[in-house]
Length: 464
Image (cartoon, rainbow, N blue to C red; front, side, top):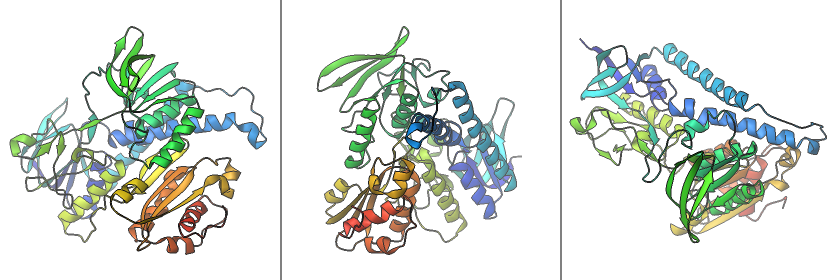
């Protein structure tokens, strides 16, 4: 007889394990099914290990600037295998930490592939065994994987994905990166830092195409200064291994041409892991690999079956998956909660300079008919940034001219991914420029730049 639970979560990524822990906290007898290591792509092959890699690049670049700080470092070098090893150690430590949290919160973990047999019956299959478990509520949190793109042949050696890019034994002499979203841009910064000649190819008019154009122009200028070649408005027709090289055929305003490099990294497009779950047999609606849900309850088209995270589509972010997991189970439990405001999701890119944003871009605000006030403040005028030697970038804030509420905020510069949280809280509380300006910010801090940018929108800025 199948063991019975109140809640079964399929998938142990940042959406699934958080949801399972919260379910147990709310008094549900909970099981989590994961075929690999808990933490999902984010913890094991994405967010966390890549940040460890990027920190190594940041430190190495800082060491090369030691003379600016009155320090002498002769012929700085690096051990690339140790850099990769450290990133894996960080991921391993966190994965073990999640295992501990599941045990601490009395979540039963099953190792294997989970799939639906009936509305409330889940099969689990591993190399060793196959069995069934039963639950009143089933939550699918199986994430996403790189999408297969016509013309691009991934062989894992010369044409690779981000997973292989985190395990290379040495930095290649040259790399073509297909796609200049957050993943592509971060790997461009990382490998360029260790001497790889980077060509960044993007189909849209700018890198980080979802960010404010003024911000991306600053990043493009910074990347080009560091020797990265950027090809925007460029379509990839074909990418394949050709002997000892990766060969990428592209098309842009100059016509068709073929690029060659030691490695080509494909960093564009994902598809939801909605296959092999038995969804079609149960009538669960899926559109272009993503499960359709009600974005309040996260219930699918079948009662009692829910889905959260990347498997339900954009925004494909770990923090969104976690938030959806918590909202989903709290709705099931009848706990008073608040729906996620998808217009208030922070986007972060961890290259140097860092990029972070929330809410509307200037262009989008104008397209929606808002009358706006825009404030800007450069980090070169911030005392803390000068002290850190990190003066590249700006803070840009967009306010509704009629009511004064913050519509969007965009930061490029030091610790942008940490600073954006202040604007997130401000936007959640429907704060105005006046309230941000009148909040006393400690001196000297980078956060003063946020206050000054808000003051600039009111024509009250002091330090520029």
